[in-house]
Image (cartoon, rainbow, N blue to C red; front, side):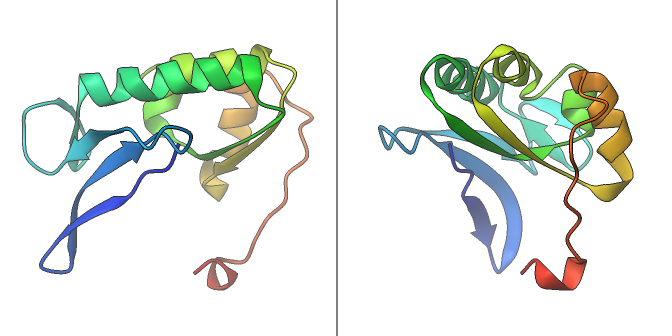
Length: 126
């Protein structure tokens, strides 16, 4: 999965989700309703279902999975949480990106309190 940004006038107004294996895309979130409101976006239930189905399938098939990013929506049980739970039960090598302020909370939520953490300076991520 990839999540291309949707721009209007140089401003981010939403995101789409793309299955990298099939090329299939769905809207993920938008600055405008309808959808599930979370912070500054409205999330498409169909887009979230699509992502979670792909993540669940990847849990059964992939050897390495990178998820960018696990955040407050997932910690509250929404967003990609169902797909992430499937990934956490899989045998895949899993890499999660997480905001520094949420690392310990994500470790607890995921049940991986001893998982290694690699911190990157913010100026190196561009």
